Image (cartoon, rainbow, N blue to C red; front, side, top):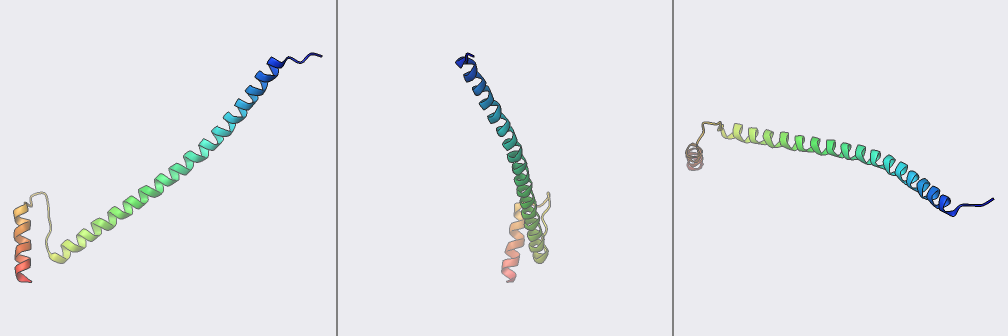
Length: 88
C-alpha cells in the first residue's frame, strides 16, 4: 500500500479550509446579529435624546412665551429678548 503524499497534503488542506470556512461563516452570522442589535440600541438612544431635546425646547419656549416658526426673523427674536431683558 503506497501513500501518495501529494494527495494527503491536498486533502488535509481542503479539510482545513472547509473547517475554517464553516467556523468563519458561523461567527460572522452571530457578529452581524450583534451589530444589528447594537445599531437598534443606538438608534433608540438617538431617538430618546432627540425627544428629550425637543421637549426641553418646548418647555423653554412655553415658559418664555415665545414661539418661533418659519416666518420669524432674527430681528423679531432680538427684539423679544431685549424686551425680556429690560423687563427683568
